[in-house]
Length: 323
Image (cartoon, rainbow, N blue to C red; front, side, top):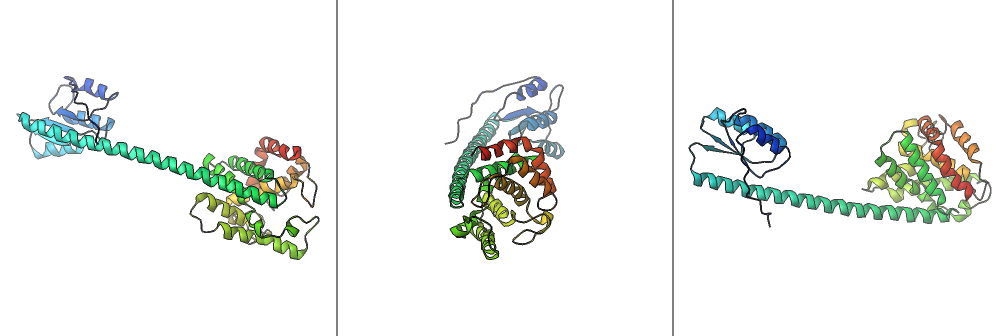
């Protein structure tokens, strides 16, 4: 049902006072005489429509020439009434315009309600999507001999580096949410390789590196921006700035920015973490290793952002030492 519009009338002998009132109030219909003191009807219409673009306007004029009507239409007039006017005709035009205005307001309210519903539904979907990602990544972390703390820290550090690079808060959060899936392809790697104490043989290394291809297949062809971001991270976080990484030996900016960011975060936290095949490195030693890899292993800009955010990253790394 369309909302009932108030039929309250406000009249102003001085058009300047009327425009001042319109700056603080809205109306459903504006009636303007072409001939007024201080301002012409055309000037009033232009100013009023600038304040309220959707307002219907009836222009009352004694001038019926084509040029005046065209000017009024260009200014924003909706209807014309020529003096002397018929009260019944004017009443009918007013009623028709108010009915149209009522329908317009109803449609606008409906559009706002639908927009709110879409925003709410999208928010729920995002929350569910994020929860699925974090639960899946934690399951993978347990299989890899971790508790889930590693993926939490890598995600936090990646978000900090993204912020240091000047990426938007939204983009940095997207990277934060996608990062936990960076090693999802390890689901296809045997426990004997994942948890082996000591270095891997060349055959085992080749098998381990297949987790990138598996991860890309798991995440590929998604319509979700979050999953697409995760796929780029999976595909490139083992590549190196100088082209000596795997699986595609990509060089420099040929590696996605998201993957270059996560490469720094992942290596740093891996160095700081205890693994079946190594002890945890001291945080400062791990930091030096990241700085040493600038321009060879890592994107120099990502390393600079890492260094800029070091106080916050060090606080995140302290959780690894505490664990």
